[in-house]
Image 1 (cartoon, rainbow, N blue to C red):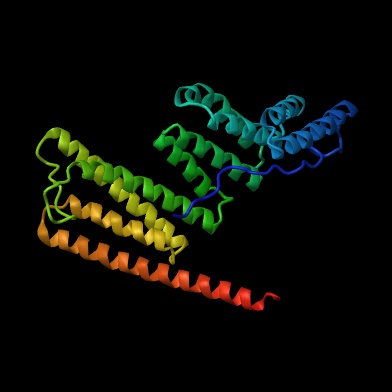
Image 2: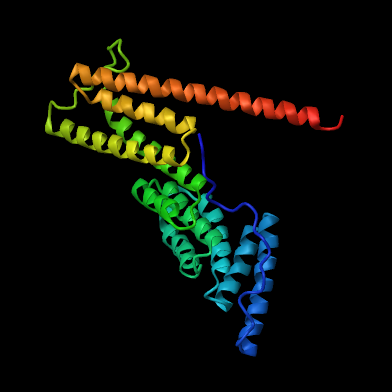
Length: 285
């Protein structure tokens, strides 16, 4: 499964914070000191001293409140602490951590690295909180922004498509007939108002999932992962369709696309092995 990195593992040392032109002596001094705080914080963070780093970064944002890098690094330390908390504690501190990354966004001036990192952290926080709706909203902000390249778009749309498939499958799986010999049998979700509501939710998720998987494939047509989930989404439509001709159509499409995904996967594995063999042959013994 493809995953887009959303957090920073190593913090780089900071350049001088802002231009020195038309800057007062006091402001320039603050920027120099803040730069030193950032660098000391980065060294502490990379050395595993998260709390020490957080203190340095807090001093930096207090000195230069409009510096996006300082807010991003400060947020990175807060997020590391956030990850070690229990569910209830996470809910309590999440607004503060989210606010830190949103400040990094506000002051980023569309710096793509800062913007992409901040958006990645925000979407990860919502994922950690099991807030799927906001997680998807912020994932799409990352994919639909000017900074997103084809890889970012492809993986993000794929990830959203997977979440939508899971949303649909959570519903259809509840109506599965455990006695049926056909794993793709019709799920009767029309026998009560509650069941119809579940069916509507599943259908909406399946259709939205298909849209995002198609967008992912538009960016990366050779992705076996996206094709696998496209096949699974056709299975979801098959589960919810009662008319046999249409069920067969969805089933045939699912099988065809699944076979394409398997073939693509085998091709990529063969190419990887060939590249590794060529590299081994070229390296000095």
